[in-house]
Image (cartoon, rainbow, N blue to C red; front, top):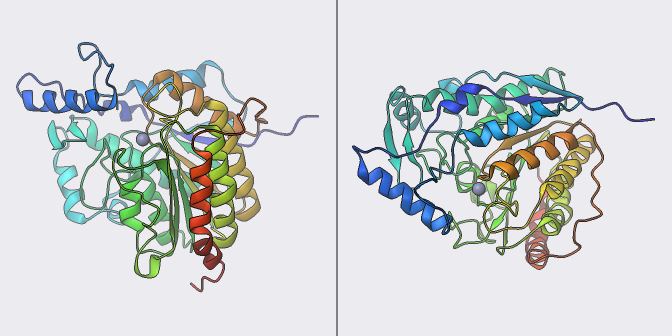
Length: 379
Ligand SMILES: [Zn+2]
């Protein structure tokens, strides 16, 4: 006897392919030079004659092609509604939203580590930011418990007032703010497991005790250079930000340890109304400098699903962040979708130890008092 598959809502809109931050513009050689310098820094072996901007439309088509090639029982394809201005302004300054909107239909340079926007970027960004809202609304309406937003541009490097690190709007922050303000959820928990620190998400919620953030990432000085252990929140949000900096080379075992020793105990103490995951597939061994694989991503997703079932009636939304290898993206997103649909994950080949495990335990020890204090929250 097999269990019924869980329904998984997958949010995707092909207009998100219209964002082309390639930066190769013969009339703006300074854009091209800046993008090439960024690529050379992160991918020293890249052939710049054939390699374009890493945050490119093929990231999404690789995932979608794979999901369509081998359909997963339980998956329902959903179209997101673009985020409205008022929804964006819950996480972003009005002047910044107005600036991005003013670029609609144009090409433009935003920042050295973000590169350019193309004529299709503004609607792509609104759809990416709207996906999480659509997912949370559908879950609140009882259509499903779990959703996966396959979006670009990504979001977690964008703070309230500027574009950074390939990100225009902070998609997950817009979704979290919607859950709090529109749906009345008192406590939202985020796990950002992208390989890079989610500096934008941290900045937006740094003093907000309604949003608990765990962020595991490659330690500074790796981009963006923030996410130190002692960045634990400010004011009423002190103790609601739990950074877990890990060394280059960390793998599946380290991330499972982060789940067991930080995410799970923090969630049990905080009792969130919904779990949100900034899901970046750049920890995959085919991508940059870490050693996870699709099995590890599926395993942590299965654990997050079980945790959501235990604490918040199953409400779980995954939001795509980074990941720049087409094969790693396709394999990981497929394995994660299968896990969300309830397929058991076989972890027999997950190594028991890797270069990140000791740092994960150290971070858990560092945060133990903050996690214990979450039990006494009064709001
Ligand atoms: Zn990343």
